[in-house]
Image 1 (cartoon, helix red, strand yellow):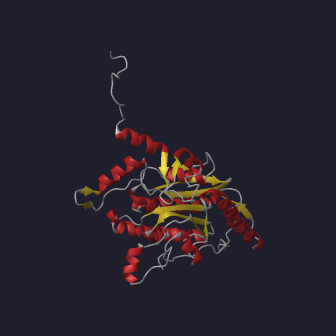
Image 2: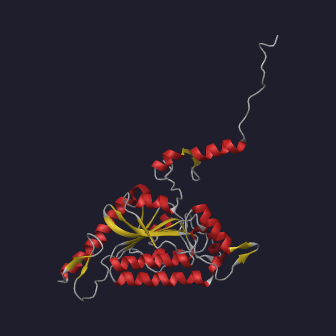
Image 3: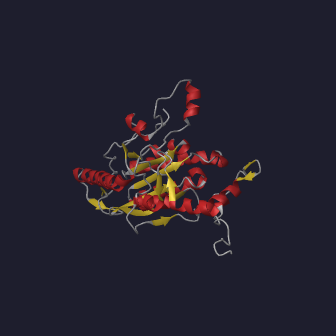
Length: 329
């Protein structure tokens, strides 16, 4: 009799690839504490580990969702694409092919998104970098889009916020990428002379030519907890100075302790801190205008005021963060 016998022996296992794909979609392992986290819950927590407060690296579009009021973002300067003027090749890999791969993988045109939006109702110009696009490296297009965002702020007298997340200048564009450091820094000098606030937010990682240019030139320099911020890597620095580096070197907290960063801000507190900072920076300029006896007019949004008439624009009222310093110093 065979009624008690199984017709099929054993259980049919799912393919390993399918099981791994489901697990990756539902769960994320914290790279800091090792906690296994439910992805949907992590999204609700703004990609901050609830156990150790580690801040996951996120793309530019996700960060814009944390930063700006819902529905307020309008992208600018689309359609700028990097070319390959040097016909750069590393082995069999061509730079132009790397660009195509990065665009397909991220859906971005390059490593920065620029636009306008609002933080708690306060109008701002924003530029948010994305490490997923060739390590957030700064080539000609990134430098040009950041420069145009600075120009937008200057024209509309609207505060500027730049979120940095970069491995530095893009080596495939050689001197052309290095020129972006001077270009963006010079334009920020014009922004300063016009007394338009600039807030720089450093996320993990912010290194190389980005650190050595616009990232450290903010009137207020903020950083996310434990973000790596520096110019050269710690191994290069250690080999150069021939001595051991202090514990926590090149972290946001280390830079705060040594005066290179004004405040380390948890992602959940970011909008509140920006709201207060923008209110202080823009109110201070309006107050200076009243004291100077000029007619105060509003340009580019509420709470941002300048002197009327042909009088020179006042110097910025707040000291903010350090300017022109190397994070590795």
